[in-house]
Structure formats: C-alpha cells, structure tokens
Length: 369
Image (cartoon, rainbow, N blue to C red; front, side):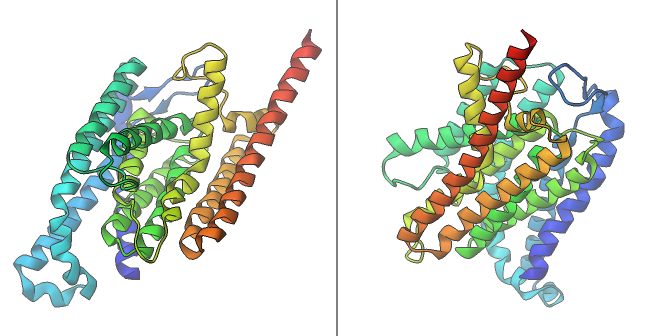
C-alpha cells in the first residue's frame, strides 16, 4: 500500500516538474505571459501555463494507471511482477474508467475556460454560467452530494454551489507565489487520508495524483516564481477538488454525519478568504469578481509580513484546519462539536488579523489627512 501510494504521488510530481520546465520556455511564444500591474505583487513578466502542466501530469498519470490495469488483466502472467494490491484492484480501476473519463472531460473544459481567460480575458458571467452548466451536466451522471439522498431539489443546488464556489475560491486564492498550489496540495493530502480511512482507494489515489502534480509545479512556483498556474490551473484545481469531494461524500456505520463537514474544515481557509473578499467588494458597491488586493494574504503583507512568510502562515492555518477535518473521523458526535469550536477559533484568528489591518489602514489614512 505504501509503495503504491508513494508511486501515485511521485509519478505525477516528476511529470509536472518536467512539463512546467517546458512550459516556461513555450509560454512566451504561446502568448501565455502575466504582465505586472498595480494590483499584482510581482514587478516582472512571468510565464503562465503551469495549470496546463498540472492538468497534463494528472492525465498522463491516469493513462499510465489505466494502461497498467489493462495489461495486468490482459496478461495474468505478469501479475507476479507487480505488488499484489495492483493485481487485486486492476478490475476495479477499469470499472471506474467511465466515471473518470466524465470527470476529466469536464475538468478539461473548465481548464480550457481558464486558459481562454488567460489569453483573451472572459467576462466573469461567461465563466460563471459555464461552470454552473458543467456541474449540472455532472449531476446528470449521478455526481452529486449524498447528504440527503432522494432530495434532488436540495442536493443538486448544493452540489452546484459547492463545486462552483470552490472553483472560484481557489481562483481567488491564486494571488501570491506558491499560495494556491501549496494550499491545494495540503488539502489534497488530507483528503487522501480521509478517503483511505473509509477504504475509498480510488478517490484517495486521485487526490494523491493531484498533490504530486502540485508539488512538481511548486518547485517552479516557489518564490520567486518562474511560472504561474494562471486561471487555467486555479480553475482546474478548484473544480477537481470540488468534484472529488462530492464523489467522496458518504456515511457509513463506522462514521457519523459529522464527517460530512470534513471538506468544510479542510478547505476552511480558501472558503473564508473568498467569502470575506466577496462581502467586502459587495459592501463597496463593486463586482465580487473584480480583482483587488483585499485578500487575506495581502492584508498580512500590509501588517508587515514578507510575502513568503504570509504564504507560510496560510500553509500552517490550512494544516491546522485540515487536522480538524481529519479528527472528525476519530471522535464521537459530541467530540466533533469541540473540533468545530476549535475550527471557529482558528478562523477567529484570521478575522482578528484582518481587523487589525483595517484599523491600521484607517489610522494611516487619518494621518495622511
């Protein structure tokens, strides 16, 4: 099991690392470059296309996995050459191929929408409508939250809200070198762990593939970044995480309904950041999709943090909220209430830091006048 999990993590890591290195050279000729602006932290032209590399690494790894499973079933004699767990689950992997094809196809469309936005700039409503339609299409194939089985009038809107909301949350979070990719990688590892706890090896493998691809990308995206993932990457990340967490919603005799809150815990930081930014923009009479520097990471920099330290602090907060989600699988429902209070306290720390930034900004503005 450890060998298979390590392979599922390392193969996409190497592929992503190699593909990102190529995209750094190809991006300028493809006009995939990010120009510095007043609201952006970098003061130089940086290649985009990291998202294409991440998506490519995920797809290539799945091709290798499915090809290996097919060979093991087609030629039983070679089963003795590989770990027993691979031979035992080959048929199960192939049985999941149709579902995987649907999810990868929808993810490819989402990635291409982000790529078009990188190249030409799409109106936010075009992307939003396309995202909603994509999720509605997935619900037709049975991909929907399993919170209230039989209550499609509730579960379908909740599924749309979760996946579309998470897609935009990861897009919003992509505002500093290493931030969105690192947070998504940590979340993927926590989701892989929770999937293993309930014996869902396929979904756990999908999360490990994504985590490996992101770490390979982070080698090139670590400050100072040599490449950005762009909207193509952040849209794919949010969509992929949203769909996989929907597929993995469950309740068994061993685990209570409180475990359904695990994704909210693990992804609490990007959800908090996108929610506060949207509320701030609306309160200021602006579009919630109008980019600015009001994200939590930007506020930390205003408080005096260097960008790298701001990113590392958000990593630690994500790790803390991820642990809260993981602990839900080991406590009784009453104990879960304590875990959720702990999560609320963590988010309270974020809120206090944001409040300190607002007070500091008001003070500076008064002194200027």
